[in-house]
Image (cartoon, rainbow, N blue to C red):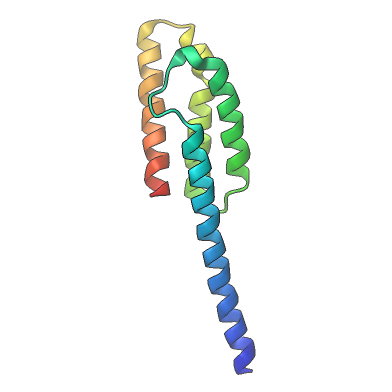
Length: 109
């Protein structure tokens, strides 16, 4: 009985370690994808990066990290539409994108 209990405890620690590794790996990949200074002129690049972030978010067990990735991906998906609008809308898009990137960095810290 003691061995079975010990095995379960070790499994729990193993799962937690695996989740931390998963989170760290996903964060490194996500932070390599994002541009820390968003440029609406790179709309095509952002569409590709948004897809990469969405795919990455699907495989992350940490909900906060996955949500932050999806939010940056959403902002990136809006790049083309916002770039076609007036300067004020572009500024709002840049600000929103920066906010979401900061949130991603925070949950990955």
